[in-house]
Length: 350
Image 1: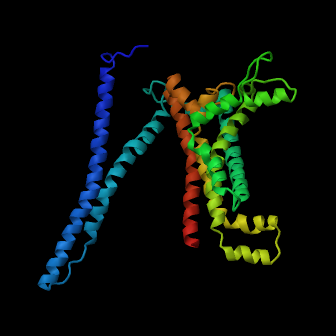
Image 2 (image 1 turned 90 degrees about the vertical axis):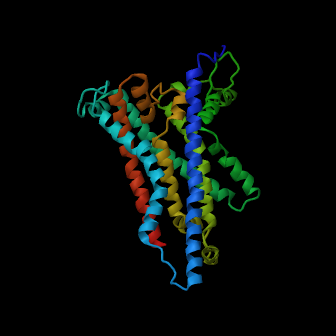
Image 3 (image 1 turned 30 degrees about the horizontal axis):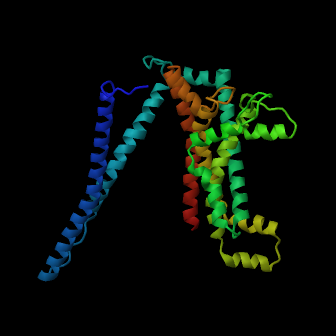
């Protein structure tokens, strides 16, 4: 396939202008972040020198100026949040009450469709299975890894290997596991690891990603494989932060390893456990890449994020896609609120 620069010139120019705009905006912000504080520092220093020479009282900083100074630095972030988050969220919410052409108001019809259509109900149930199993299993495996490798030989190497899947993109991880689940006919040599194990044990190869609900569980394995490393790193750091005097006192009391884990380790790392579960739960609710890459949402494996994409961009149903997006947002909000309250409680206790 030949690439014609003449035909692609408009797109290349758009890309070039985008890069120039990005460089100007980012470069300008970096210059301001460097120049503005330096300017005020020099001005303050000059005022202090002049006051010391003249014997006049030292000038005090006024709070209004400090407020304007803080607003100056917060303004770019606020504008980006408005443009990239608040405005799209409001627009999506409005679109969820309109038809597929985004021209006529249909009220709550899109939300009724969401709970009346059997295929979409299946999507919601799949999402519920994901958000129930992935945080619990990934956190449990991460905790197990953290306990097993704590103060073990080659601890750093073991942690690096366990954390490595986290460095792989969801798409890359899905491709790897598609090879694990790969299927060939019974008269052919199996290239999929799982089918090869089954055949070596005397069984028959299966098309694992076609059988529901087993295929959903196999996709969940991919997410757990990725997130377990993250859970291990956070929980391992929390375990190492447990005061040594508490551990020594428990050992002097004659507690066994299980009692040590249940009565000392778990209560001590409870805040870290909550952070891990909440973080993985939010990531699981938004899962898209794994389903899209492994099955394309077919064979009853679709989840909310994938179906939202299908409805809005494949089928042209803007209203229904927006309704799914709003519903996903509603599911994430309570988790975020819970995490904020938990962090505030930890600060008060600290």
